[in-house]
Image (tube, rainbow, N blue to C red; front, side):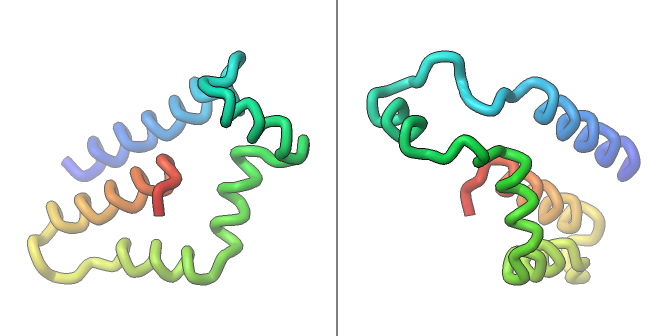
Length: 93
């Protein structure tokens, strides 16, 4: 069961990297258009993720959520795993 969930999560992660573009063709608002104009051209999605994993506090947070706590067994561990992955993909920390 755990391997199936891990496989589905991995497949979804691969799809996110394939489907999501760096930025949309047309900005959704004037504010976003201005934001695009002010950002440097070398800023990228993958660069932001790499910067996250260079941050020691972020790495410690990921390790903390990944460590099994002994409560709820396998389901609790999967829940924590999904929370960390989902949060990191959505960029809402």
